[in-house]
Image (cartoon, rainbow, N blue to C red; front, side, top):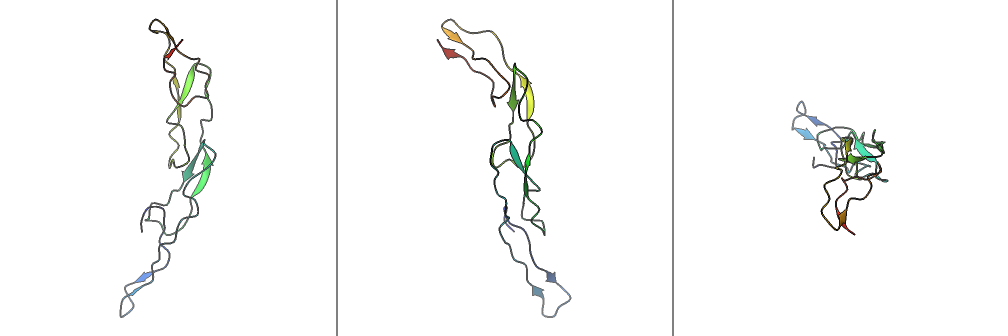
Length: 113
């Protein structure tokens, strides 16, 4: 079956003539909301059950001075989020780097004053 669907039914080679009653219904969960969740047991088209569910990612926020790298978004199929240290210092004249407070999902970039 295509991604986002699962196999339902049977394919019985013992039947003569060959009997194929496989259907490909849609999986109930194809995205999650709010951000911070991922699709656990994502339907990849090869399973025979719809076990997909929205699960909270282990990393929801980080400490001050860190950002959430690879944060879970609505269509994530794995929990890959980690905390990573933000880049500090090294600003060019006329620019500043906003504070990295642990809730950001990307490293802070320079901004003009």
